[in-house]
Image (tube, rainbow, N blue to C red; front, top):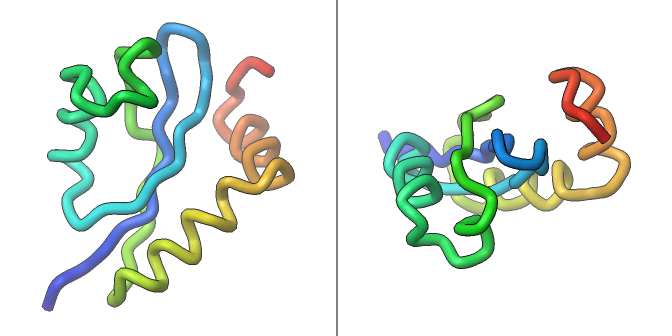
Length: 84
């Protein structure tokens, strides 16, 4: 069975958070850290804070959108003690 993931990254450069979804979290993290993702290139390196597994792409994308809300990002920052 194929799984999909919603994930949260933290920039070690400026403590920014990035939320995304993918089929392969480890490969996606490599892409972010190699500078191949334009929106995150300037804020490398990135570390994985959390990933959540789903059985469908639509569920993962729904969770990604939810985690991107201002309120959820604030809760993630508190949970992982990320500077605001």
